[in-house]
Image (cartoon, rainbow, N blue to C red; front, side, top):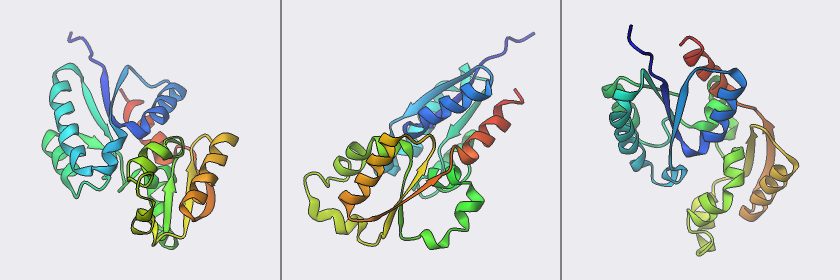
Length: 199
């Protein structure tokens, strides 16, 4: 009888903490986790090649590989890669959608002028947003990036008072309004539970 190999989740670095929480809480099987740098969200052309490389390297060592990314601005490249390699990914266009619930998010047409933060992005606001977009060095770029937004919507997974204050401060730094929506893990939990509970 063939020895069973573990499963692998190739994940956006912005989701690693939440994925570990879900895997631990639901006691899902022997699952390994590999992260791709969250900063690739500022360079989405890097995402699909990085995912393809990880899949190719891992295929011989795992029974199942799953990609914990949404479409994330890759212009269809991520879907092309995973389709060719026979791998599935999380639903939706971006993590804000599956944290909210893809169907719920799709109904939010009034949120087109909202900039979303998750727990991860609140924690990493300086490195991903301020430094990553060059706003720390060139504050005049604020209008180019955020001039069409009206508010920050903080989609929290496990909020603390510290995270709440940081999220409000981020809105203030960008000159935007603030709204908090406690969404938890949304579709992330249900998809991982459905995918790996059967193994």
